[in-house]
Length: 217
Image (cartoon, rainbow, N blue to C red; front, side, top):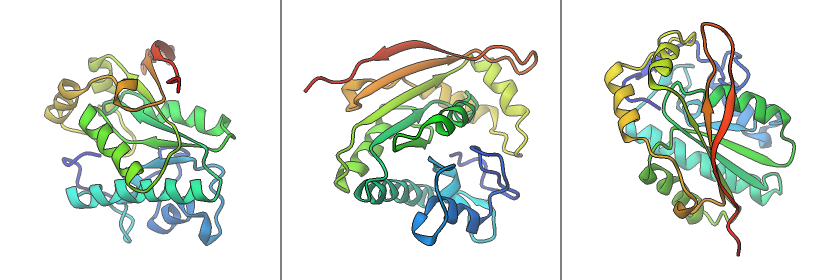
């Protein structure tokens, strides 16, 4: 989530690319009100920042509360037996996290919840893991890092269809602060993927460039 993009209208779900109003967002993420989550196994911090008017409304406090709500949702899903695996997606803006997730989430039917947030450095990832621990979530958490050439990511950001274009200074900051996750941080498994997709040619894709195995107990 970006502090530079404080408000936008006509928000779309980055998983299915459908318009995402406040009520639709709540329904898609809360099965207790009667809407299936079969096609929405991706929990996005951005989605929790959509207000009642349907606008994206970022403040640091709202972002912190959104992260806690996501962890509470995971806890509730785990208690119901609907979540057996957590995969946290890490990476800078415009590296292709959402595009990778669209393919993974639609093919996954094993009780996996995917968490889409930047999680670009150890401090951010430690905060996420600590929030889960504080709620008593004991499920293994895997990390998938998506990485992309910075100049290519900048071009992709400038062409975004949803109206959210991050300033160059913010993109540079995230790139500078990014570090690849490790099992030493507390993850059960870590995979790093390189996004070689070329927006101009429509060619390329994701390839594994590094991985760390499951921790043996």
